Image 1: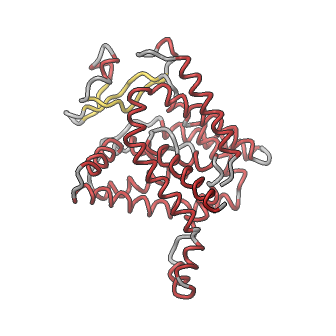
Image 2: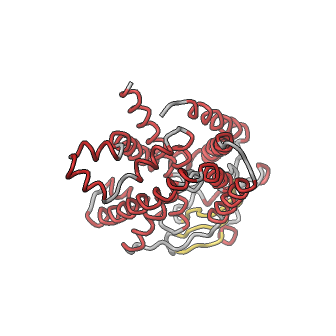
Image 3: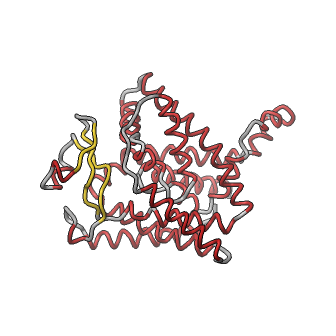
Length: 327
């Protein structure tokens, strides 16, 4: 049974890692609908200076049990695997089957919102307000225009803190926060380059980002965990609002609006440089960083409507199946 639990935790971690690679999809959403969200928060929140005293008094085993070490380690291995798969596999799928990928996650998040709402004991005025605030906050964050990236190690550190804090919030994607800060392309490119040709400069960049992630994770997890203990209904409503407010970022049909010119290293309007938007995806000098939601008949490419509908249904059903599994 323990081995089966470990396997399940590994797969959950892998799904979280893959989700975090995709701007607009949150690993926190995956953690929540698979039943490990509160356990994950509790495990992370238990990490702190007090562990030094536990180590001296009771040894490593006491510390390992206190932080739910087996669970965290299995999850982290799964997440690392998922990130590697996401960097190469998910990037390929988005490049060739974008509409279906976004539709799958669209269905998944819609079902997740319903799942979270269903888990709330009762809705009163405060709960509805929390739901609305969460939705508005997520929409405002995900509607922001991206900044220019910066390879300063201090900026890289704080990017890690902010991105991993978003991981804790279902509905707010860590990778999207990196995109807003202009760090998504820079980090993904550095990671790909390091995996292909390891070097000290890229290792330092990645290491500083990871340290920022660790600091942000330990800090923010305590905040959310405390809210969960003291105000569970309000916290759940806010998280559901976050997921709903971010849904517009993964609408399957989105026309390019803002591009990043890699050669000139600046942002440009798509309509100013391309009369045929299909050519954007064929031009390696440009990367789409912002887009606008449209209906299938206004989509710049083949909408693949039937495939999109099927993918959305599959994502919706998957949430039901995941929510029935045991952590």
